[in-house]
Image (cartoon, rainbow, N blue to C red; front, top):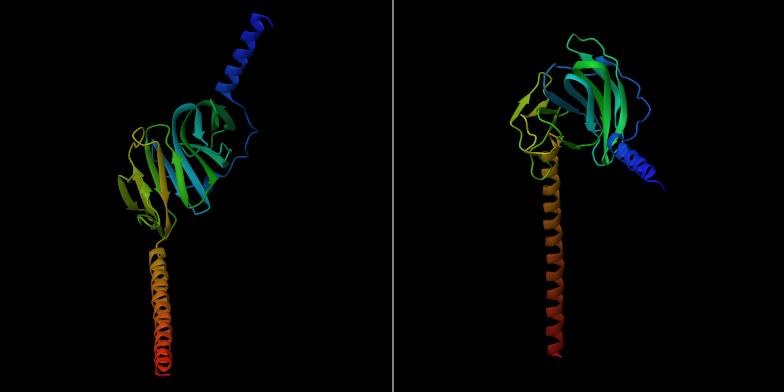
Length: 235
């Protein structure tokens, strides 16, 4: 094989590693289905036990990369892009692999400033990598909370915790990156500690009852044994 052919293979391999592969376009969503509060330099995660609405601000960019995490799945549904005037902006979204890491890549025809929003499937163990500086907000579902060492906590500790107009708890981190590379929140229903307390109380009462029952049975058996041994000695 000639040297220029070897060089071509090497360059092609490097190109694949750097630019990755492109997946088919994803169907756009409806901006009215998202909460777009207009907070600049902030990523907001609206949690909903089985899904997450993500709203991320964008400033004068033609591309936006979203880290897809360890699975590498293109977990992006119903994406939208809206500028500060509330107008929809056209875009393309595709999967991109860069040095083995998977990203969702948003591409705009011209420098875009506004908000990108999309939905992801997820559970109650929320965790997302941090890749750049900026504020992060996590909005819990209504009547859910976190903070119990046994049931789940937010890591790292939020800089601020507030309640929005809908009564939902909002956890705020101000520029956590690069000190922290991951934000995670394990959340649960507010009445979960009470239910758990009743459950442990039930277990405790059941355990005490069983212990008392077996103690009485053993005590009766010991009395019968003592009577039998006494009768035997008399004979």
